Image (cartoon, rainbow, N blue to C red):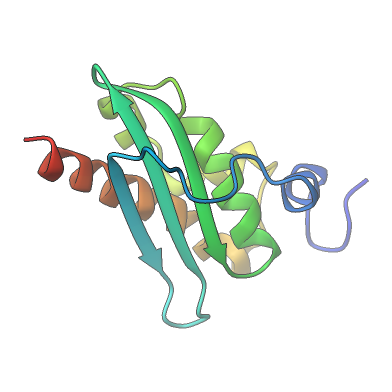
Length: 126
């Protein structure tokens, strides 16, 4: 059952976040933030043979930011780097059953963090 502005999927990821915390053996880290609201997402990835084998996150933000971070890790695990780079904020929002317009910036954090984590991986492993 949806609560207020949020779908069941958002509430589920908020209440039961997947892959929360720092990934000890990460070989790529991306930091994304929204200066207007103060949300900050840090995404950790472990890439092996061009596949994102594991991912986790740390977040400072609202319900939608935490849910977006959680679902972002699910969306990228098992994907190649190029497949992960194709994920947009709209994909993240869709995986959450939608976000209110005023919370779409939270899904942008996920997209930006993916790009930054991949860039960090490529820089570190070049």
